[in-house]
Image (tube, rainbow, N blue to C red; front, side):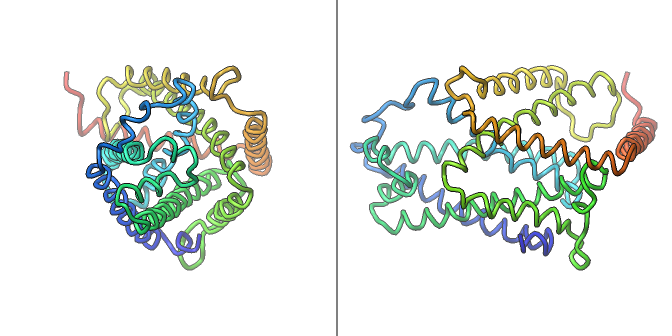
Length: 333
């Protein structure tokens, strides 16, 4: 929280340091798994997936929460020294790299940690690292890497979440105090303190509470992704000539496929599915939704019509930019 209040440069410095540490430890785990004695490999002791489709679904419902960090790239775009096309490219590259990284870590743990040990392990990845290098030092090193992973994720959430709250506050969709800037560092200090405070308290409720928050939060995240996918497709029809610095081939088809996949993900959380939300998780989701509605309603009552006027002005300016761009870059016939 303190790093983020100090500014993006300080926060980015910490993020780079943490990522380098994670990269070193994760690479060490992967190398250890490659060099691991194949006679004791988990591949000949257990199936590749345990629990069948239901087990896979139980993991999938947590995945959206883990991918929230990528939202930081567009949310912090104004403070990133990159062109818009490059921001889009970096976003896609980062997701591809992350998928490969997760696959590599999962394979490494599955290869070096026997099923019997995995069932009784409280820190499976650390135990896998210990097995891979036949030394307790390796497990301790991985725990340090894991802590860096938690802190870097936390840091990313603070960057993206605070900028989102700030932007919504400036558009009068949330109370004005969330849009206050620090007098010295020019950062959204109140938004950072709010998210930082909640994130500091959350772990004190224990592991079970964190699982509830991840599952319920994942459902809300998939709803947000679905709304983005719908907006993406609607704009292809309503604004076909909009300036798009980062172009996506077959945009309409991509939009339709994304909506279908998003709806499929939403179904995994529904009652009757092996990975359905528990009653407590539904209460968390509805409670968070009510809080959002209350804050949004308060802002609309205090600033009636202003948020609509701000959005209308932004759309008007965007259309002017589009017209100027089309004038200089007429479409090819």
